[in-house]
Amino acid sequence: MSIPQKFSATKPLAAVASVVLLMSALAVALPAQAAEANVAVADGYTVSTVPNKSYGTTAKISVGFDSADSKSSYLKFMTLGPIASTDQLKIELTVLGGTAGVIKASTVASSWSEGTLTYASAPEAGKSVGSVAVSGGKEKVALTLSGISASDGTVSIKLDRSSGLSRIASREASGAQPTITVTKNATTVPTTPPVASTPPVGTTPPTPPVASEPSTCQVSAKLVPSCGVLYGASANPLSGESWDQALVNFEKTSGRTMDIAHYYKRGQSAMFPNTAELNRQDETGKNRILFYNWKPSGMTWRKVADGAADSYLKQLAAHMKANADKPFYLSLNAEMEDEVNTAAGSGQTATDYRDFFRHVTQVLRANGASNMVTVMNYTGIQKWGEMSWFKDLYPGNDVVDWIAQDPYAFGKPPVWLTDFAGLVNRTSNSSTWPGFYNWAAANYPDKPQMLGEWGVDEDPAYPTYKADFFKTAGAQLAKLPKLKALVYWDSSGVEPSGNVLSVGDTLVTSKTTSLAAYKSFSNSDLLTKAGASYLK
Image 1: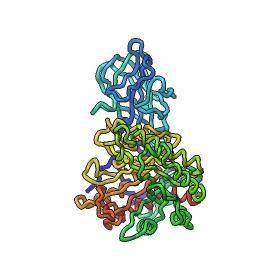
Image 2: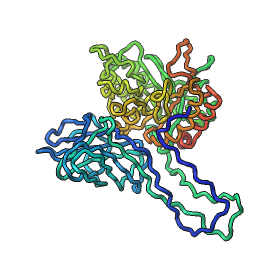
Image 3: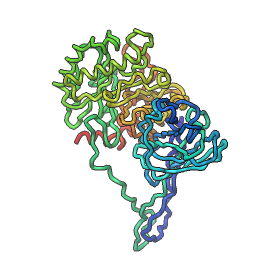
Image 4: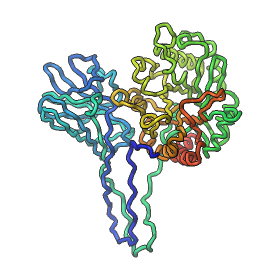
């Protein structure tokens, strides 16, 4: 089956004519290329006379003046790919009514979110980037923006009017949502220099040089790569393998070393990193990053938050201080949404988890675990994202270094069996849930994102699906700049106990064609240059 493409593929160039004409050394303009329209991931408006109220979930946004009120609207778009100042951006708006006049657009910082945007907290307007006239009635208008650059593909805009009022359909208004289209401006490349004679038929003209990667490419102390994407795995033991041997065998299958080795720890006795894991970390020429997922046993989140595990945590911190000589990732009770119990006193509410994460992180840091890089690891599915308690899980920017989700491609199309872009932004209704990648980027724009686990099922009902997924994943990953690490879950889909996992057969060896496509993806430049820089 062919995977539905969220991003259009670039068309091949026409064949080179057999006779090459003599040309002067002039630049040739390439045609402008337009991307598909992207729906706003966040919007809202503010009211001057109600400075602390948020209007982020209404079906409309308002701009201008109504009696004594001054209203401003805000729009945020993401995953647009790198934007240059020469690119043209066009926002399509559905105006629901108001008065005739001009809507003006200016840039703002993208740190705001729908749930917290108020007149008192709104970001200040930056430079003016466009305007559009409105008639006052119901109409669709195109607001053209210019002079915007955004390497991370995020555009955040404030809308104002100097007089009059406009009411505009918001992203919660089905079928009339604000969208943006990015058109890459005409770009020039040098043609072949003048030649003294016609080259022989069949000779390939010289290819213009490709810009090289910046020499400053590096991985930060918080394990964030400045170029590319770190790649790793949780290789599940097969046929009696140890976890350690499973990782080595998976690397042989993949034809590459993993940048990240993912391990799972349970209970209040495990000391990590252990000797075997440190040997993998420090193996000559490998330099893997260790990634741990710890979960308490026999204790609720509230008990841990209240100090019941402190003696163990202090001992673990001392062990980490003595043995973890390099930065490592640590997630705490990953996929916690599945374990939330909203009953008062359960010890497992969303706020109990928040306090649990904060307490564990603070105790470990205070007792010497200075190389620990924390990961807030969600399941990331829409069901939980729409829960009233979902935002209560977050423990605070000061104790969270990365944000992760664990998405899998399995089940039925188009929501669950999807391409890579759909995998990281899975949603059946973008007006109520924008997809996890978009949600995290809008609410925590300064946090790098990771796929803490992910995998692709080999489904006999769709015989080419898995190979097609990997063939298209690289191009789509390149348009998701917040994603800085991927950690694959390689599993047969059946646990040693015989329990069948719902995510299916994610083994990369599930089919010869799937393995070939996977190896091409995992060995691509995008997924190898970050690790190569870490080895330096």
